[in-house]
Image 1 (cartoon, rainbow, N blue to C red):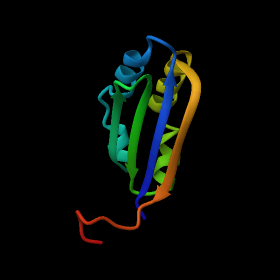
Image 2 (tube, rainbow, N blue to C red; image 1 turned 135 degrees about the horizontal axis):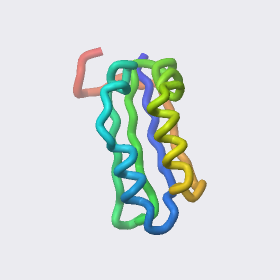
Image 3 (cartoon, rainbow, N blue to C red; image 1 turned 90 degrees about the vertical axis):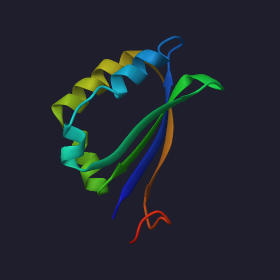
Length: 101
């Protein structure tokens, strides 16, 4: 079943764009392991927050992605830029009006 992960990452003041650049670096490994969608966004109303929306073929594929050396390196690189404020929601997708099944 398709798995969604939608989160908010608090960036240290002035570091938001650097976090966005890090999270949007091109790389095919995520798609190869089962990532269907990985979108990064910002809001003028919240200048120190980065929003991430992920869609995976399964929760297991998402967990496996966290073991990829490139993902682990990106997390380590991002940590000093983050304030520690994080929130989000994870859920199993049960349907959509945009696609069959």
